[in-house]
Length: 67
Ligand SMILES: [Zn+2]
Image 1 (cartoon, rainbow, N blue to C red):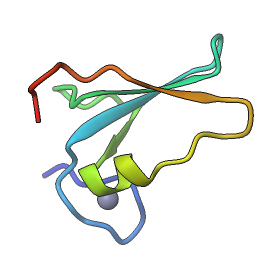
Image 2 (image 1 turned 180 degrees about the vertical axis):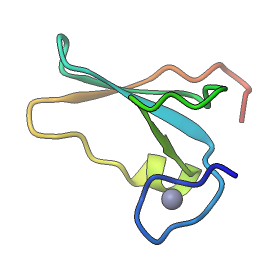
Image 3 (image 1 turned 90 degrees about the horizontal axis):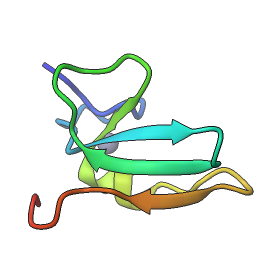
């Protein structure tokens, strides 16, 4: 079973987060299947609470209505 990447969370992830280093963008997207080891799976709560590194921006790329 897949779980949120946050330590001690253990909740089933709702989104997959990708870091685009070239653009300094944190992309929040729909959960990828199969899991991509280069990306982070996060539950909805941790995705909403996520703060980008300094100098980075967050882009929400989730499909409309997917929630
Ligand atoms: Zn979580």
